[in-house]
Length: 618
Ligand SMILES: Cc1ncc(C[n+]2csc(CCOP(=O)(O)OP(=O)(O)O)c2C)c(N)n1
Ligand SMILES: CC(=O)[C@@H](O)[C@H](O)COP(=O)(O)O
Ligand SMILES: [Mg+2]
Image 1 (spheres, rainbow, N blue to C red):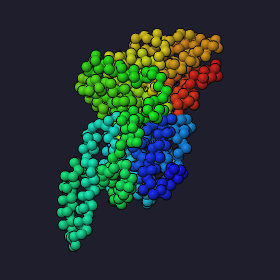
Image 2 (spheres, rainbow, N blue to C red):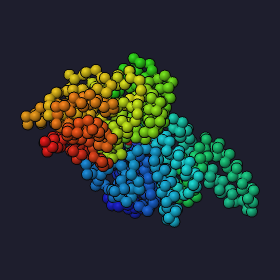
Image 3 (cartoon, protein in one colour):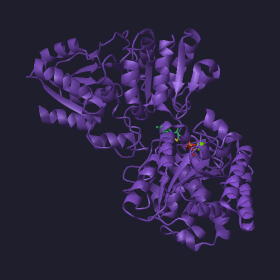
Image 4 (spheres, rainbow, N blue to C red):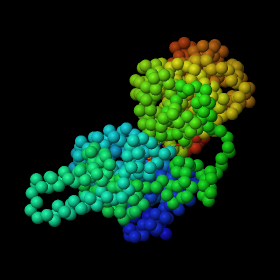
């Protein structure tokens, strides 16, 4: 086994490149064996095996810096830097992260998880290197999907002005999570797959060298001709026009070719882009056929590519998907917007049935929100379906473009709360704070699957900016009998008791039920309220609770700061200083990867911990 030779960074250099096809095969077998058991990002990793090997062969880590965009494709990098054992604990609490982490290895140059940041970070490294007079290479590896994100162009613009030595590797597999979209994607797909541009470059260089006594004017003329020829050979010459030297496209599964080109890229003066063509899911038939399904996967049966442990229960995304399909039929003004997540947000069905009213804007959350503002002003009812952590990108657009103009834009905020195995970068723990601080915004969270549907109906009938946030995973199907009509700013009384009031937001209503059960066993008779609205706050309900409860417990899957609990404390503290308020919320730390259940325990927002806190307080 060649893989056994790899114990630490740069060990790959001990393996002769003619053995690389065997090493690539072993790495793919290793990835499949582990990811089929643990779950994780598979298809992108299978596609990036040879690319990573070639990079590790040519560059020297940790001195040289490889910055992985998003970071979901960094598994081979982890293997080649001596972290094979970590794959047994991949994405579990205390185990190895699924993304690059500087705390995990000196070879991880940059912590990532969100898209389109690698070129900016790379340009920063390059400037710091040159200011300090240091000597190393910086390589940003960005996918064609990530190249739909605006930050990438801001960074290229900057890199081109700075003219510093810097390598960008474009890993083009013609896929984002779903099919890649937009102009840049079509541009890349239209590029010739031959290596014509290389041949031309080499040809021109050779001819220049062979002509004795060639003067500067003649060379200038030849360069001009070369540029015109390049334009003929490669449509658009977009990257060169942006100020980068373009090399490619090259076969991203041919290690020898990549090694040759990366070595050439090292010698280029100024920023250079190497365009590498890879195949998402390579080497595993089900992933090649369904790259979107195997982009990020739970544990699956390796032989057939079928997920294990699928209990068939609907999750919140499924409910949202059904609601949107119904709106598509009933309300012609409803349009759907996603930033490259039609699968993850459940909008695929809407896309298939109402393609004219569906917009995938690429990995461009900021644009998605301002685009929705325009749609709303033009008379449509846009539903922006987006993960909580990705919406962080667009806070300014929510404030300036949507809320300031008080526009009817609906935000369907999926993956709100602890998402689990993706960890810090993906936990949806800030949205209640960053949404409810904005004037004109209404913020709701459903307690169960029926309420998500009711809240979406309410959101469509409402006129103004409004957000519904719901968690990743199985939709709660308890408390079906509690289905009072939704009224803006009004919470829902589930059980009226006295002494202790549990006031819970969304997913925490289920936890509050469990806390209530424990308290009932002790002889207490706690009240349980489903908050429904985080903004506006139901002050009438708070007034009424304050009258006959000594302790009010707020419960939310959001950071404490700026969240529901802090709003309740602010109100009660002045109006009813005698009432004790306990806030169960996420702590002021970035929550790592692990199962949501374990993370809740760690954060002290599981039923047991909240019960204990109440007991201590009384
Ligand atoms: C800001 C942000 N929005 C959305 C995502 C979700 N996301 C993760 S990977 C990905 C697709 C990236 O495509 P590409 O860069 O081509 O990499 P590939 O998966 O094809 O290897 C998306 C949309 C994200 N990580 N960050
Ligand atoms: C890397 C990335 O950002 C996505 O692939 C994300 O991991 C998807 O998360 P879900 O599995 O919750 O859709
Ligand atoms: Mg891609």
